[in-house]
Image (cartoon, rainbow, N blue to C red; front, side, top):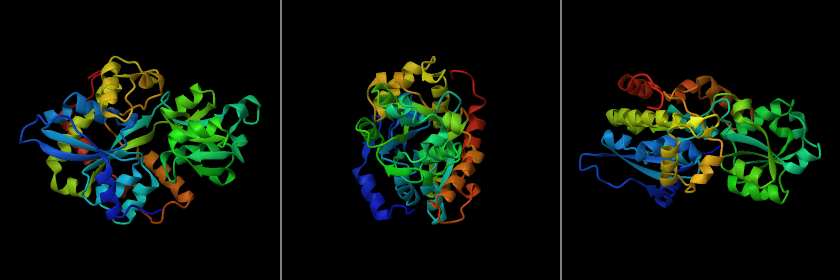
Length: 348
């Protein structure tokens, strides 16, 4: 699986939409360039911007919106980004294996019990007719994914494994998440592994049924992480720690918005406002309807989950090197931030 060339990465950044709060920080603020999909998994970043956590640290965070985490690997390694957010994908392990200089430094989004944000959807008529009753019945279906080697692929693979199947037992097609709703409606796909808000929209439209989800299939698996460039790690360590301090404060505030699989906890109003302002979705009603991501209040990385992902990618032939999880991660920044912040206090 190839990664972007530096020229392609530069073009991607040039065409990306820049999101930044008003520059009222003064001449002493330090710019930090962040690549993000601006999906609901980026709630901690959005909150840290909206509540001024980055500003408190003297940081001017400038966000370039890119479509996938895979698109961010090369510009991150080339030093065109300092930080990126997104799911751990095959592209991450291949990037490090190819010498691209970056590290996975913290978690962002977690499939905790009740927070199955990655959903296995099956077309409603296939459920109603009894064609699909169990995991083994997924055999032979046309299964939509957003791309190769993603977190959704790992979730789909686990669903198939529970039916004694592999990805070779389904017909994989690659369709963007929004387009999957239309594909269900016109019956050109039978199943999909999709994310919010598209899963909820397909269900509300009467096109699909939630058959299973990531919180059941891969409990507490990581759907999103924070990545640092090697240049940022080596040459801006103090800034990188400050970013992590603000980011973990954002994580903890988001945690105070979560309640029973929805954004309806004490902090929900402010979190939804931040998402409406900074994410790619500007309708607050969407965030009240969907299943959100859970978070780890310390940004801890689940290394066993990363090993599970890596094994799934290897099994599908998406990895072309022997990179290990240990070569990909660096927990020193979250460790340093936690020494500054101290233990989590509810709704802080």
